[in-house]
Image 1 (tube, one colour):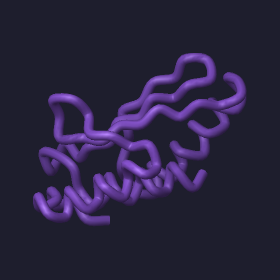
Image 2 (cartoon, rainbow, N blue to C red; image 1 turned 180 degrees about the vertical axis):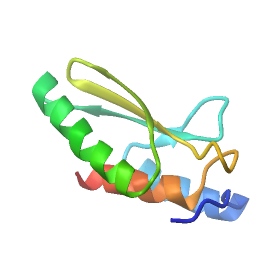
Image 3 (cartoon, helix red, strand yellow; image 1 turned 45 degrees about the vertical axis):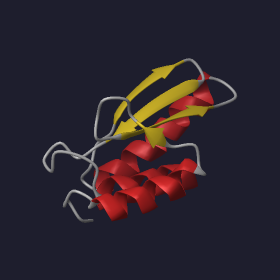
Image 4 (cartoon, rainbow, N blue to C red; image 1 turned 90 degrees about the vertical axis):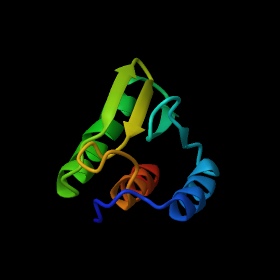
Length: 97
């Protein structure tokens, strides 16, 4: 996965595509965020376990928090200083889980 910061054109295209899946720009940051809602805590935690495995395979680790049946996820590439293809690809993988 590429760690290069997205160009403004690539960023706009990626955000347009991801917005259809519920992703949004994080306020005041070069990052994307999404809240996932599940039936209960067990379902939310099971999703986090699968998502963590995908993140580890990609060597990319999200910022996230869990409260009961909700998981809030923020993706950015700290080493690149903002949004990269790596973030976009991991967002798509998370949506597939």
